[in-house]
Image (cartoon, one colour):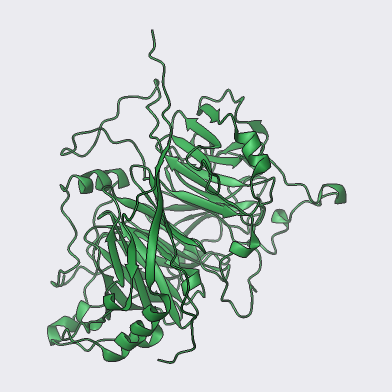
Length: 574
């Protein structure tokens, strides 16, 4: 007889005095990469920043998500890491999507002139939305299938907590919902509940693990949420948790059968979302369109223009054939796309790949504008500053790198991690267009916070003529995220070396728009706070108005309460 599969429950702990994050002026310094001496002006700036935002972030709770047992139909897992002692499922660690229905918790915005970019596909009559009767204008379109009663072999089962309905009817509408993936499970949590460890709904999948997900901020209401999830099989799920309805997009990989590495709703769009796939392809999907077997279209081949950077437009947003998905499909490279991030201006896109490239796009025009290279190895994560002026990346070189978007150049390297950097994020409540705070997490189990201002990001002078020679990044072979996590946690992986100084003559990437800046010519920024926050790699970081949150490979979601803002921010000059 088959052994019944038993689901375990989430657990929560409230460590007393454990793992506080001390942020204070004692941590700040700035080292000039040319001679190692402190930069007094930059140090004074950081002192001012930290006096404003210093304090202790207190660990409120540690929510441990239960790892679901394997489905009986799953084939035995073979770990490709020869040094590993345990099987490794196809997971990218626990990622969290947060949504608040309280407008007071909305992050501050910094775009002075507002959003002036047209909608994606503007001018293409084939993409014009169908007219909606006035009586239906306020209604949100939902997926067609009931996930609880689903007979799909893709969905194993759905576990709804017995008190979910009552908790939803009684809850404070100002609370925060969280959605989190762990292996083949996808959980819906109420973070403002007294029983936040008890899921509202847990969806278990059979043939794939959800690797990424996103919530549509445009369509959210107290009774409706649109969520898209990307899976290790390439399939995408459009899920509405209030009604427990869902639809399956890119079913069986009919458009692209490569794993979905990242997924985001297009800014300002109710229907369109962008998914990156592990085979170097970006795809724009419409949640309400049916799939069709995809064959590349002839688009006039603008990518053949030698004056333009490479992008292979296999289907353009301007195509008149818009009855089925995809809306658009772009091939950037033959390497894995690790992550992407939309700029606040609703026009630009930053994409990072395993080949070590950061590619900047005008996605409305389907153009690649610029290509930068990491110092060493692949890039893993990317984000924009709230005002769209800076881009921050992290990767296999153990470095966090700050890039200026208007100036199209690197402005600083941030050194403090001892392993691969897995996620970066700006803290919008600690940014004001003059000074910026952001955080990073990595496989070294550390959470780091960083402060910088425009005035402190000077260019150090080169101290040796040899250091001015440009080199190209060393590009490493594509590796699966699960390999690096398991190898890291066992201390068995050959680490990248962010301190390396040797140059690689002749190893020039013809596609890179800029040579890699030598370390001696780039400002070096240390963290204002560094803390080991667990025993397994950290893979997600999020800032809320009242807290900082992280999640880890093994399922720990940790929340730190912000310090009380007893010091009022004052105007200061560099």
